[in-house]
Length: 523
Image 1 (cartoon, rainbow, N blue to C red):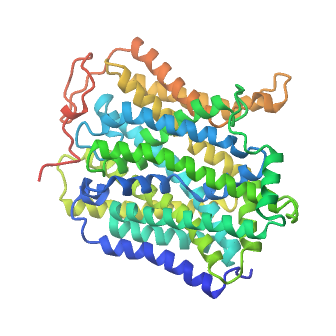
Image 2 (tube, rainbow, N blue to C red):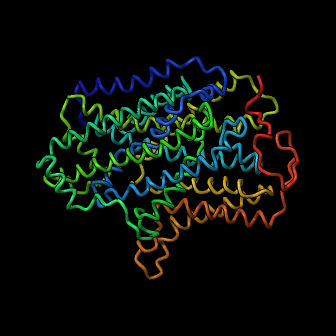
Image 3 (cartoon, one colour):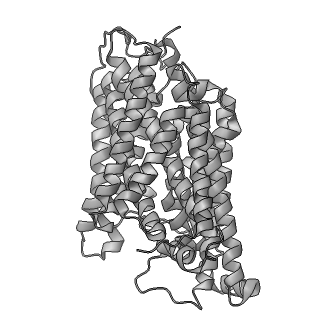
């Protein structure tokens, strides 16, 4: 397959990728302790954490699929979900963020260990590791497909190239490298997206006036759909409730995000980064949807290949309609790669920190040296990078429907973990068995809703019994929380006697700061 990149495009792309490696080298060697390597010494500015949060939650799928919603029938109704994201972040700042700063934690799941016991912490960590690496391996596959089309490399080599660069700068610089690279990558994909707006407008047959006529007659400016529907993801209730719970789960219980908050200089700095990220994401989605509407106007007069899906339209325009060998195609490819690399690097760092903190250090009787801890963390980073590359290559043998279902399953952890965190906040009696049984019920409910319910026709069309994706974390978290509360009332409290969790009365209030943490030894 012939490459769509010219010499200038390749230079632009190499400069963008080279900047990531340069930042990794620049901060390499400064991380002499586990806390410095995984949390940047808890001294990163809030605005850098803000850029890192936004870049991390923006994957290649976001850059390509959100314009697809603007191109298709959804239009700006998609922003109802972004409103829910803002609401969810506010709840995270009020209820969950204080728990992460009440003590000297490295992992989000240490809270569950303190509240319920080591088994719950380990289950939460393993659930995070499995779903995060499965999901991000599949996102790597989607990015590799774009690189395959633009550069002409085989899918496997495309996945290896993206994954290897990400592993390298994450391995070298730890969290500092991840955060500063995220900021650079945020600027790259935003610059590419804004450039795309002017390129598309320049090629519209009727220019700006033609676009306004198209936009006003298409009805895509509509922002609010007040209907209540469990099957339509783009209504006000699905957006506000589903989006809020989804954001509470992804930004309040996911180690990939919590690791950033713990890298801030203070709780107030972390709160500013979380709240402003919601605003930036709303504006970012607006830009991507606007690009999709421009593409809708463009392809009124230009034919698309038969069978092209809405989330493939933006990539098709980049390949076939961007000016050749001007650097713009290279910039757009750099933007797409920046989106996926920011997510992957964060995933690698978070996975390594979860393994080291939740599964390794907590099982040791003696704390290893800081050098040993950083070395093991770096080995874990490489391991998860190779694992995600393998998943990305393996996904090339799947049908697209299989990939979509696997991504859905990868999102199941959001509801279960959120249910556990609120169970910890709302209960006083300690029952690890209640938490585990509640999580099991939550998982069963999610599997039933996603895969079992569509098979139960009840004489109705399939679409009538399909639960839209924003509702899944709502039902998953409620099932986990409510069943956990029920089991907590029925089962006796746990009696735990260990060095890290001494026996405590059942009604003792949740106070993470009072529990010692072997993960943060005194120097």
